[in-house]
Image (tube, rainbow, N blue to C red; front, side, top):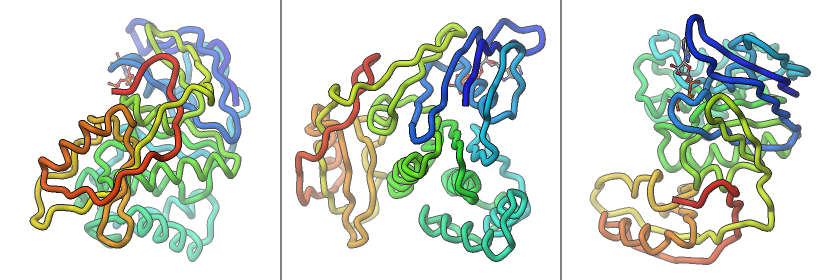
Length: 287
Ligand SMILES: Nc1ncnc2c1ncn2[C@@H]1O[C@H](COP(=O)(O)OP(=O)(O)OP(=O)(O)O)[C@@H](O)[C@H]1O
């Protein structure tokens, strides 16, 4: 799929995007970065066809598009399960398959509050899980996610990273926005930086990688504050190991600071390993 010379100006405003050329490649994960209001969401909406460009062309958009919008409608009376079944049917699945796929995704993302709760009764993070699930209910050839980690707990944080990798491994093109360089570094193959309406794409050189430390932690006995804010300390992702422990991958250069923060919050450290090396985009270091 290609964008050629794409520009966007909302009525009466200054141009948000100008002359954007962008290729979305099957099997590749592209991160869109840029400051607040730089036009990342606008670019994603143009990619999925939710917003029309004011100029330029969008070519060869695949038929099956999964989209996680920046704001997911939250005032629905439908339950999560019936909403996903409905979305599956709209995209061509039979009812039984739509229900099965939707329920499987909700289980995987560990929806808390129940698949049979109306959407308007769900918390922000659980609503975000439904937003992610609806984008995947039919395997997408193009998956576009606008700040998809926003509000997710650490278990779902890890699952989302896996899901993105799976869509790409099955030949889907993936594009996402996120502010955290650590997440971009480990998830994306290329980075598209939007600044002053222009988009510049940087290949992530597989040779240019950062060390990742794998930390296994035991949660505090008494429930306390959540594990160190994933926005800080260079955390890539975290997941439950199924046996009461949490496995966190953190940029090696930040592992001491992360461990200190976790210990202060009452977590115990079970194990620390040097793990694989992850991408580092050329345009910036990890926070
Ligand atoms: N529907 C709209 N009508 C008018 N202006 C809009 C509309 N949507 C976005 N804009 C404007 O376009 C600019 C880019 O917005 P956009 O949401 O694409 O940026 P962003 O990079 O995703 O920002 P953030 O990081 O804050 O989510 C902003 O100035 C915004 O106010």
